[in-house]
Amino acid sequence: MMQFITLVQIRPEGASPGPGSRAAARAPQWQHLQHQFQLVGGRVNQIWNILGNDYDLMFVGEADDPKTLHRIDAICKADGYMSKTHPAIEAAEYAQLVQDTADVLKYGGARRVPGERDEA
Image (tube, rainbow, N blue to C red; front, side, top):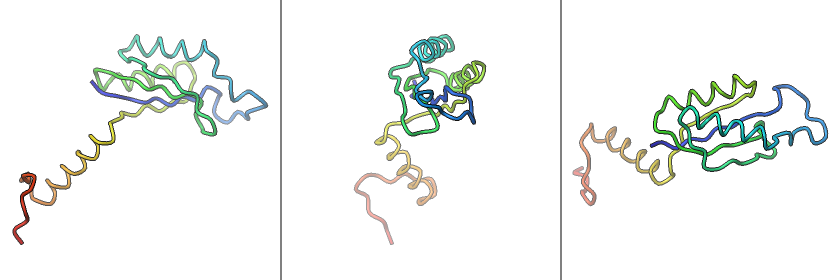
C-alpha cells in the first residue's frame, strides 16, 4: 500500500480571485472528488483546505496501485481542476532510504553491518 497527496486548484487557472471566491471549495466539490478517487482505487483519509497557496484542497490518502495516482490526476483534469498527485513516504522511512542509497553508492553495493567500522 502506498500513501499519496493530491493538490487541487478549484478555481480555473489564471482566474483572479475576487473577495471570497478563492474559498470556493464547497463541500459538494470535494465530496465529489473524494467519491471519484474511491472509484479508481484511492482511499481518502483527510481533506484539507490550503490557504495562501496556488492550490485550494489537499487530499491525503492511500492506494494499492501506483497507477491509481495517475487516474486521480486524470479525474481532476476531466472535471476541469488543475491538480498534482505525489506519492508520500513517512520521514523516518525516507531517511532510511536515503541512508541505504548512500551506503550502496559509497561501498559499491556491499551493505554495511551496523556497528562495522571503515577499514581505511
